[in-house]
Image 1: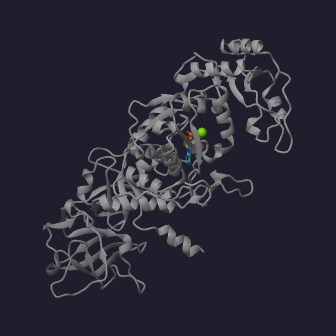
Image 2 (image 1 turned 180 degrees about the horizontal axis):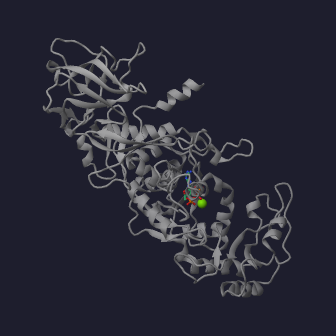
Image 3 (image 1 turned 90 degrees about the horizontal axis):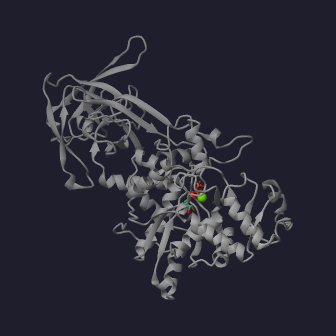
Length: 565
Ligand code: ATP
Ligand code: MG
């Protein structure tokens, strides 16, 4: 997927691949993969990895694989497999036939394990999980050999085959690499390669009751697919010696190069599937695709575009060191894309009636409105205008402060694309004093929004004709977490305690211009002055879209954060 006109900043991964190509490594091939575990939905961090892996393969005329790393049957599910594929396709990547599953390699992986056993490089250990842990040692102390470490090859082969045949219960034995229990890198202290789990797998059913561990599966799956550059996040740096060890000792068909890069971290955002699952299961959000979620499906439902996400990933780049990206940068990316492409519309979120006393009772004016000032080709549309309108409650103040340029008693303002109006009167609820209605007069000579006598007004406000308005719900979102680092530990609290109780506000009875009734689920637009919105993909009905605010027009948070300091 190539975005035009992008300026691609270089990075250490690109440099490394160019060096390999120049040196004639891998016969000039570049093959990468994205290896999700189907135990949750993809999030924006995964998008970074997808854009990197798939983007870089594209850039060098290479190939990329989608491989499900499905070796943990208890936590995995086809629901996740399907959602992951949908999300990657939506992001704009097509892996064609190159869809793979680690579970398809179970037989081959078993064969590699047998090779290790035959070389004396793996053994069946019968210590309990707890004993294995206590034998491991610490950073400062070497580990202790298991009493089973010196079993003969014959005995190991026999036990491993019987593990596979289902003769033993979960936890009775494991297969371990035979490396070095005093190795300074704890990961190299005879890591577990296989464990017994008598559970049904979503793809292989009950064909297997032993399952390979990540460190064993991952490198060999890479090798079986002829991956040249295995890009993974930084937390696997310590696993690289094991990655290389397994490939060498199991006599893998080729030796992919593991290269680590920093995971994406975002302010005000949680990017851990385990925690995201918790938000869903405990009902803090409605589902994985709740528009407040940092999942790809949540961002999609919120109104984010694939181009915005890809541009964001391009802009943050890849580095070797962890850093935290301001979530404002993601919001900037979607604003930038929608600014170019979103049709402008008028929508009143918190309506206040405005009556134009000198406007004829049954007259309807059809006014021309510009669809997108950034793009002339998007043309114009007609807006019905009549005697009774709705304006935003906030756009009228009875007793305005100095710098308030919107409507107030005696004030003249421009109604967008329409006329100048002057406020003449206010109607209030006798009991509560609440403002129910404002009365104005209009100047027919200002049709289209400018005055022939050159008279200027300072404020322009949006409006919707009351009898033509389309009424629906609009949902405004705020950050899901209140802290820049939601994981920040404050005494006995965790990220759940940092949830923002006001992360969603549902407004009903919003009055929108009638053209908005035609939007299909997923369509986006800008409500002038109010932000970018999209028709919700789940809750909209034909002829009655419900809207989600994707993002405000400007970064209002930046201002608030500044004011707080
Ligand atoms: P999580 O911590 O959210 O559960 P994970 O690493 O366990 O993520 P996987 O399905 O194993 O999830 O991830 C697939 C790929 O995506 C891995 O190569 C992983 O390195 C990468 N990845 C996951 N999270 C991020 C992130 N925040 N930034 C960049 N890459 C990520
Ligand atoms: Mg993982």
